Image (cartoon, rainbow, N blue to C red; front, top):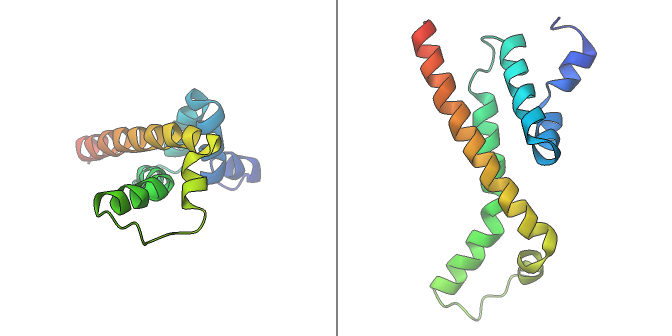
Length: 118
């Protein structure tokens, strides 16, 4: 079943990320399906990828917060305020929180199950 192209496409990281955005429960089911298909290969890659993607989405907000905390008014990053105030970015912030949460939960669960079964 590992050689089936449709299964590989369905269990790929981009498909999982898109489904986590539009249909979170189906995205979680695909993560579990990926664990079932690829039992030992890259066991911690999914949770780490989810956490990194979630943190990458938060980077512009973090840069803006650091600039405000240090009171660096002379530092001006082009389009940073436009990105932060856009409606799409505000929706992506809730998505990043969900990605980080799901990533941490799957990391803890995979760590526990990996230690129990080994």
